[in-house]
Length: 101
Image (tube, rainbow, N blue to C red; front, side, top):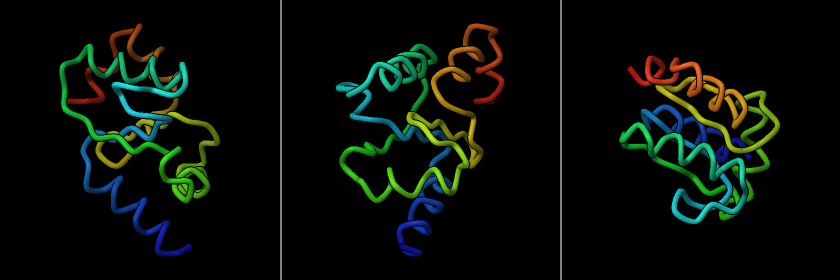
């Protein structure tokens, strides 16, 4: 399990923008994941993703690391931005772009 946690931490550190989601950005498996992916697409930025349905060990352990219980989870520059509600609010208030810069 320590190896799984370290791998998750490494992924967060090694990817500037990383979305842990259900499904993929092109085939999301839940509405919240779909919404966050669409918001990211609207900024025309590159981002990485991890499908937590494909990796149940990530799904089980990430909430311990992030202290966030639900998915999706968006990380930018190693920091948790939040889930669907927070990302949507930041997008609506035009603050999300500053998070990326």
